[in-house]
Amino acid sequence: MNKIFISSDHAGFKLKQSIIKYLSNNNMNYQDLGPYTKSRVDYPDYAHKVAKKVKINKNNMGILICGSGTGMNIVANKYKNIRAAQCFNLKSTKLSRLHNDANIITLGSRLLSTKNALDYVKAFINTKFEGGRHSKRIKKI
Image (tube, rainbow, N blue to C red):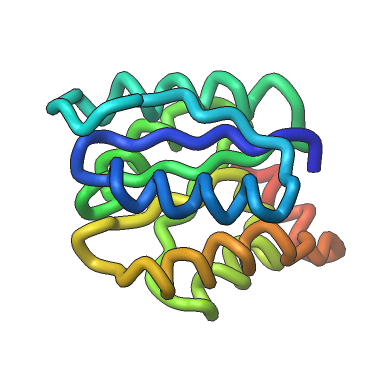
């Protein structure tokens, strides 16, 4: 992994701060692309920022947080070579990496506890793509 880019909207701001603390405490190379306050913002603006950065280098990853995780997911998946996965549990998180080579995780701050969200981020970062038969499928996307 080269770098992790993270962003949220206002609904995901508090959870984003908790994830940044985890990334920082574990000496991970990350960049916060905003917002930098809890003021109301439009989620597409921040999803675009992360997707553009992740697509530059195949070793980059992204973390996007909004109220449901859905809006960020829809925007990010508009970009070529972005495979954003909305994750709800550990199994969906690990499979998104193992089978789909997801490079952005999207999380719903109104749907997940901070502990669960942190567990999903850890799993996303630490799970490697299996390749093999899954590579052929990724190429069809």
